[in-house]
Image (tube, rainbow, N blue to C red; front, top):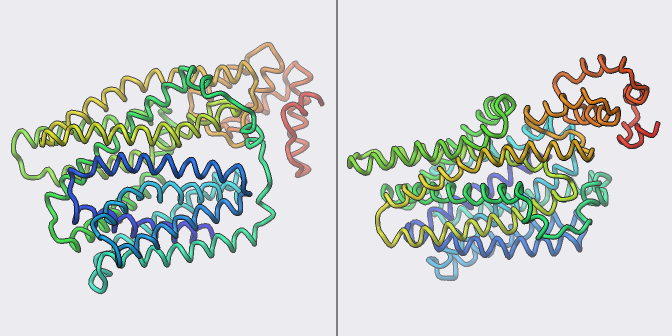
Length: 491
């Protein structure tokens, strides 16, 4: 059911984005794109504020229905405006709301999978479930050109509407069938009730570095986005050809994403850690901008091809490398701060960064020289590279602080090798509680050599450590839930 829910949502998003991109470039031009980024930032802030308002007042079931229902109303509203309103202004509004639609669908699906899956199920099945959206990108993207033989571009929104209606029905069916899974509060939600001042967050070097890198990532992403649309506009005049191109582009992007997610990103991050995950995108940006600048200086004629490949690589690296890296960073933040940090990141920092990108690009477009945009991208990539190493250092310091304070980790937490090694080193401590905490943490993060470590420590000189391990094994053999670290220590 989640797979088909993901597939239907993916179909809706693909046809909405294809329509938005095509209609915007048909009725406006690249010079108006910075205004889109600025307005999108304002819309995202408003919708984020509205979501947080409802989140504190509604139960999760109703919140999910409202999130997806609001997306459905947006698409229906735009389709109606296409028929009766000014098509040019509607095209601009479509582009402005595109990021907000993606955000709401992502929030709805993320919350839903978090409720229906345990952590163990999620780690095993989330990739399979998400392949529904990837399949939608491939199938939907390849079908755009064929479908446009029978309908006009504006009617592609009808496909989005039908897909969203079916997705909404699937959501309601899952809510009824798995109503017992919708528990009132998790331990993390309890932590989120603890008031944490914004000033305390902003006075922490780690969080400031994280926000700084996030701002630069948006600067790079939307600058690459601008370059891509610039060259697409230069090469397509017919709207149906333009829509067909976007369909093929999304199909190719989904196919590469599938391969990267299944066979590349996980292995690379496990082996090289978060520094590698942080460096991939800016290195691609530097190479891409250098190629485009060289092509511009030499007046060569294949800039469009390079821009398309550049955009593909940037999108794939962003989704398969950078997003998992940011999730690892999130898990190194103590639980009592994590909710607040992530909320500031998604509802303030990201929209603010989008708006800043819009303002900078608006100024650069006055120069009427795409080389100036290449220069902006180069500078942003170098700043990103400069900030990545200090962020990685602060990440490890945060893990060390969690170890020192023995702050409980979540079950199934994912940390990179460098962070895992800190817990392995901590097993040598003469403090038996430090040893127990480190053992508990390695078990929760599914450390690859945990079984051998447990066998070795069953003969530990500390009685508390031996009792902890015996208690752990006993609970596993009887099928009972493993008790909390504090309860084990008491035993």
